Length: 257
Length: 342
Image (cartoon, rainbow over all chains, first blue to last red):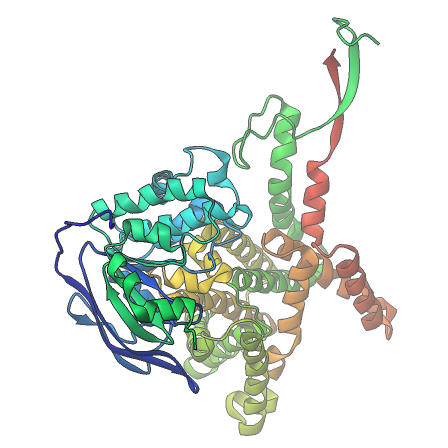
């Protein structure tokens, strides 16, 4: 059962048509089509190597597509530089958390706050962005004024790194947030505290794409699931329906012949 | 000895900076004049020393001071570029461009020194950034290779084409009125660059530059154009290097192919490594050890280079963290006797 059924679908935010990527002879993503509406939480699942991360890299501009088209709010963003796409309001996290290891945790958040998208909003005077950054860290569950906020990001425990990535997305005031395996490596307790943060983001009207291997947790919050296998979309629908599909069962469990 | 004996007095050693530092590195609670000196002497003394040196040095060593300051500034600019994650093996490029620009402006347009130096600084910075624009996407050793090759390419181009005076160089350029102006101009420039860069890297702008070194992809996903930021950093470094070149052109009243020599690339790098990278103070200290050392060894003759090279190796092997970091650590570990009641 999906936790946020009955949510009113908003305007068309992201439109992906025929998106493909070949790495040499390997067809990593093949002719992917999907739409994403404002306020949706889309789960992106599939076995290892099925092209989930490549698809995200194509949307966010880190990899140039071999073919196809990505539109965001009706604007063609295919092949734009990653920072241009981020400025339009698409934020992402990385599968391997990418903190600025030498900087204190809260200074990590100052980087997206310096982006032209939000530079003016977070105040211009020396230290202004620091306090905005600390507020954002508190929003994702860093204890206010605890020493963790001031520690070098490279020395943070895994759970905090994931929160840090979330805070970076929030700092950019993104409308579409793409989370690449946010739940991986988190304990049950950490999950229990991070899921409410995502639910809060949903209530604020954010649109979210989650690449996830922890399906049980994902299905509790996802409105819709897109299943990839060998670079192709093999199912698209509500979590319960998708898991009934034979294609999906085969992809995850293998065929018997 | 009774553990709860009341007022038995013991002595124990404690670190001087215990009680001075409150929670963070930049808030202090000073309770005595001695503690004030402990905190304030290290940053203030070198500044006073630098400003006093031209007054007490004989003419020869005044000239050494000028060369040393130039290398120190180049080392600072090298260190700054490293903060952004770009390891340059070609500070000579920036230095040489500035030197030739100043010389050309002097010969061709007969501009006064006070115009040639600022113009060469700005245009030199701009040219450096533009020249390196195509390689901004390169990281690590690939970027270094290009910076290593460019000054050599310029040198050979001038030799082959005879432009800018060819192998003869440009002679008879204007010089400074006297050595005092030379000394103080370069020392003040050194201090400005030093404090300017230190301030710059602590601002949010500088923070973004540091982050690019840490992880450029994550900076991009923060909506920041890292290529534009890197180009700006190259402009800053390029201008600083070009200023040094333009300054030396007018000190020598001459500019020739040696301005693109490897010395101007390697010595700044060696200074920063020996002195300690990442603080700027280390680069400054390194230059003020290496350059005068090289001068002092002149008396020995032939073996000079060997001894110089050996001492360089010894420094790097014995204190790989850099002299500044080592001294700083030791300074913070100074202890004093303190009475404790037990």
